[in-house]
Every structure is written in C-alpha cells, then in structure tokens.
Length: 188
Ligand code: ZN
Image (cartoon, rainbow, N blue to C red; front, side, top):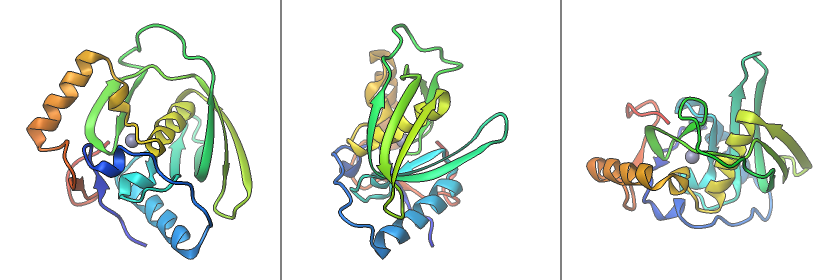
C-alpha cells in the first residue's frame, strides 16, 4: 500500500467524467487500498479515484459522527438520487465544505439533505445507501468528482472569484499540480 499524490484543481483528470469500472481486478483492489491510505493520511472524509489521477468511477469515504459511529466504505460505479435542494443561501457555519483537490479552504454550498445511492462494493455485490445530513453532503461531493465537477465549480460568483484568486496565487489551475499527504502541509 502507498499514499498517493492528490491532484489539485486544474489537472484535466479532475475536470472530465470518469469511466465505469468494467471488472474488479487485483489492480482495482490495490488502487482502493491506496485510496483508503491516502484519504486517511490527508486526512479527508472522502476521496475519488480521479483525485489520485485515475479516471474511474470509484470513491472511498470515512466519517465519524458525533455519536462516534464510524462509517466507512468504497463505492464502485455509483448512481445517485438526491432529494430536492432547499432554496436559499447556505449557512457559512453549518454548510461549508472543503476538498482535498482545493486544499486548505472551505466555502459554503447548499446541498441536498437526503440522498440514495446504488453501487457495487469491492466484492462486486450490489449496495444501496440512504443517508442524510453530512453523510449526504459527502456522497454528493464525491459523486461530483466522478462527473468531473469540483465543489468550487458550484459556488456563488463571489466565492468563485475568490477561488480563482487563490488558485492564481498558489500556481494552481493548471495540469500536473498535486500535493502529498504527510509531506506537504495542506489539508482539505
Ligand atoms: Zn473533493
């Protein structure tokens, strides 16, 4: 197993739709093991394969609730359904999220409160997941990665301008920029 470098906004792999996994091979299992290790090292609550440069429809997630219930897994070829999004502006304290591919920053974004996913697990078995609240947010965020969408793409015009300013200042927003968990002092 190995910690992998995480691509940063601007790398083409983050901005194009990923391909379905055809077959769960040893290579896929090794990739998923590396993704878990990378996600934990970052640390992050989710990591999609495109973020480590692999254009496949896979993501890992890990979240511990207030009641300490650990929630952790990997989804392959997920399909997502979301409940209608409540209209209105997001609350910056309660509805801000971050991304390992735009590390060290958080911006408010309104998401659906409730989602359902169907997917395949690492053994090739079908799984269905119904979640709400922060778990639903994680699922929407990671699923977006598989369609080449970053959460910063969904921000208000004002926040998007801030994102571009930050990207310019740090030399992001171009191909081939990445950071290494445990080496570079950045976090999502
Ligand atoms: Zn992300």
